[in-house]
Length: 123
Length: 146
Image 1 (cartoon, rainbow over the protein chains, first blue to last red):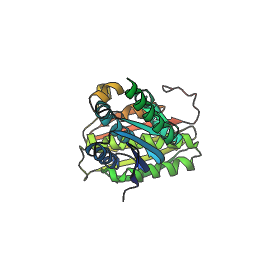
Image 2: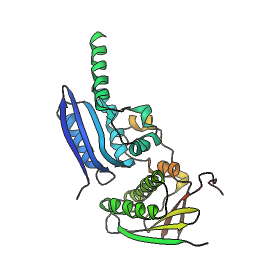
Image 3: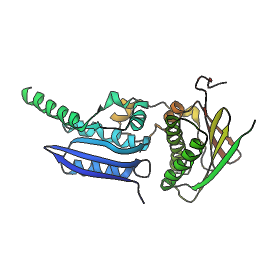
Image 4: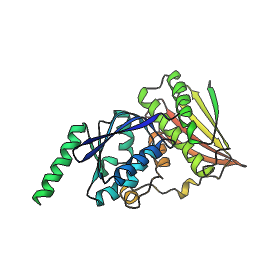
């Protein structure tokens, strides 16, 4: 029985993924399947809401790592929001805040996508 | 020196990682370690066991992993034993996340995380048994080579 789930929500052209439970080498494939589903539906702007994520190991971090470049090449991104402090600490150990937008709230992540879209339209 | 030893054996499958984390959490809490350290120990044992499952046993689920939590007055040590392919720590390359992202790499961060979280991480092989020993001292000021 898996102690991890991914919920899907749309907010404009952004796909929000709600992570719940514990993300490790056993459950990482579920996150990978969720990101692949976003890609197959041409949703390359993804906000990961980590409020319900209680644990992460490097296997979970590795999924974000494996897809971030592809999504950015497609004009999208993965922005990570609302992480529990103990989960953020694991992201921080590997220096993920240098590679990913990690913000405190989902609204902040959505606002960053809106801002990037406006800047893109102006440019 | 007085010590308590708690042991668990799991099959070499990722489905048992949660059990190992709970086992370590229970005994680390009983040893009165701070909540932050308990979290660090959970991640470290998870990373070590994942490496055994994926690399030492190459994903074959029919093997066993022996995990022991050894509590001493000044430290907690997690000892992991397997009989798979041995790990050569001197060949481990520290991860560069930008390079890993460029190469779409999913793994290779486990040992780095273990070393960052624990005060001491050691590997040894005796006969066909590989052993990874990870220690956290109660006093943060104790040097890793003390």
